[in-house]
Length: 304
Image 1 (cartoon, rainbow, N blue to C red):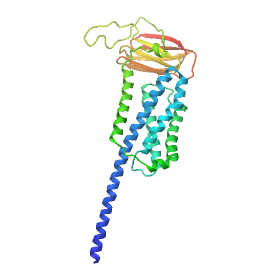
Image 2: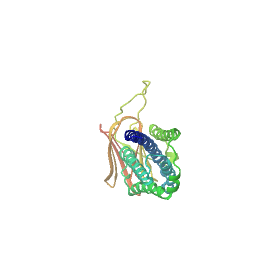
Image 3: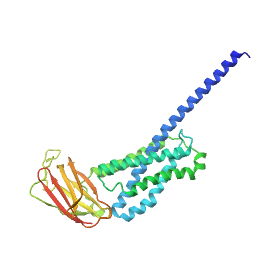
Image 4: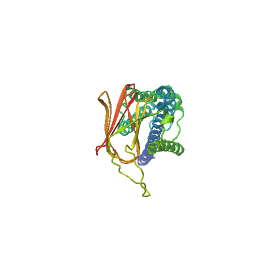
């Protein structure tokens, strides 16, 4: 065999090797993209599921909420993280995969806590030390499962399927729909079933400005002098404001012994329910004040 033919044969082998390497690289990239997508969906589902599991019981009993947080939450977070680790990805190193999963879980949880609780709910207690313990626990859980279950996880990796995407997508939509459904029905009186107590409000003679004075069919409805009600929930240290009409910009303040512990300016454009979170463990007598731009004023006192 001549030198030229040997060189050509080596070139063909080299080219075939390059093609195989490129193909493997493309396959790994696709696996990585699928794994990142399904992992992000899984974390979103686990995050909102954990809030649903804790939020409702916690509103009835703080002790019950703490018990569920320490018992039930770690179980489904552990199962969800295991599923993510068991799914195929382009990352061959299991610890790198677990580290990436931990970063995704902590990042999504931190961002969701900021946007939903800190910004939307205006909770000042969201950055409690226990919140950061929760972030650390997610990282420990991911890395711990990778260490303890390494042999099992490396033995069998499952491909990411469309069915898994569909299931996670439907679960996430149901959780978000439930959240929006609760927020879209602000006038439903749940004070009896949830143990909330209504705060009796006093007001001056100036009615709050109503942005909409009629119904969609053109008929007019009777608007109360104070078009909102206030409830206090002693078990989870929260105050609920149910606005029955859009009343524009209002100043909301909660004080104790003359010291303001909460204040915000809100633009109420339509009927809505708003929650104000007080620091856990506080006690004593408090006053809530709501002032409108037109001079309307209402206040009420309550005890925790």
